[in-house]
Length: 234
Image (cartoon, rainbow, N blue to C red):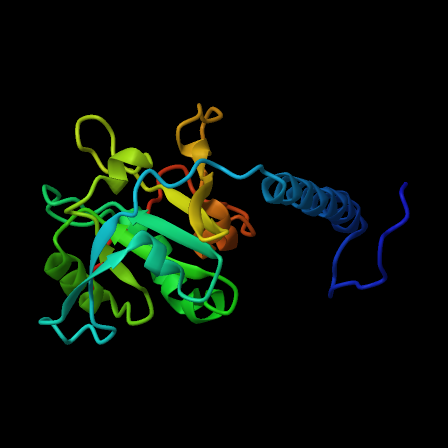
């Protein structure tokens, strides 16, 4: 029997539980090492291609109650005083009756983290719908910390694989960097486009998504048929 990695014990736990938990703990520690190896490979990526163009987005006021203010902002301006920009493509196209519930769940969490992200990088969310439609939904959700953009007037979604050939929206996360005054693409969550393992949906942005990380700690896991909804009734 392998020696336990620590001395902490919980009330009434059995030797069988401790043995299984120690085996799991070793796997969890190795997972952490593997995640760091993957992160190191990601950080070491060579510089991607220069941005296809300095896309112009529509942006409203920081106060979601202000429905009048609209300004045009370039991709290069989204960096502010940072050299890294995370730009999430929110699946809410003009032909969609409602936004994607999965994107909405992810952004509910990132709205709370936005102030922390801003200490290290710039972060923005772009959707294909007109700006008033995006902001109306954001008011409903209380997304007061997200920088919301409309990509309705540019080709960003198609160029950076947030939209398919038929106009369907895709939940891509792209990372751009600024080097020597030029904007370059750095990373896309490309697991979205790769084959998924049997029984799994694409998990390309799951590391950003508190919902799945929490459910993975439970006996029933994510569930075979559970997906977030825009609302769950009374």
